[in-house]
Length: 325
Ligand code: GYE
Image (cartoon, rainbow, N blue to C red):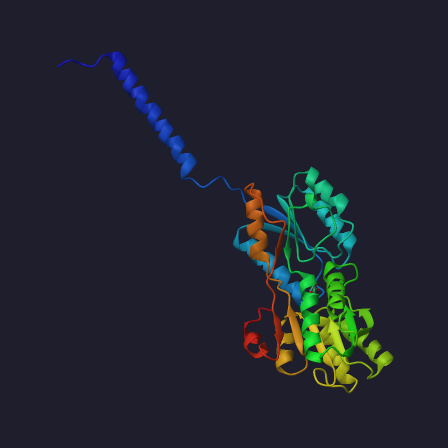
């Protein structure tokens, strides 16, 4: 039998070694998960002004926890300057990404530029901002213009286009308040007998909604027909003031608001609120899906909007039990 030459044995074993190295390399490339270090993300929230807000915070916190993401959370206590300094701190801490729920829509340009220069992606959730779109990756939340239009459309139908409206508006300078005001006014513009006779801010807060309603009741007595509140908390506070003034909310006067808290939808069932336009705070999963794509170098849509609904006496009873907050 002819023995293989030393050189051919060597060649063969070198070949086997090279092949197994290739196999190993191939294995490392194809089936092992891409190296994922746990992410650290900064999230600056507006504050805790409403139940909607608390639900929004819970949604982002619980989704981050589910995904093993460390979330550095800052409550800006309704102060825009606290939000700017929180973002600056996140940049100094070299977080992997920053999520902002903006109080007001203006003033974001310089700090977003700083984040961009530091290569830290920024996602905006809940309220939109006026800054240049190149300075942040995406916006995720509700379409407040649509909400204002839906509220107006419902009201025009329900009143036949007639009535004196008191408006309780939200945080001045916030996209939620500005858009809901503007779009509602647009929506009733073609009904000349449907008029906003007064508009005051209750800052999206229940106690301020009650106080401002008390002042409006002193000023207008019973000479008004409809309350349009930019959120449920203010509407619920106002309802108390209306009752204390001896009027029946939902009957003597109409009440329409935005958000969709369980208590507000229950108030429709109880006949104290006539209509609630939904605004979904539970965007955590959508926000962190977008973040995962951004981190993986993929592009995400510039704007992602919730699909929101209208609740009134026709559907509130079957909706109330499934309201999440
Ligand atoms: O309607 C209100 C909250 O920005 C959509 O802010 C949000 C609004 C929400 O305080 O309840």
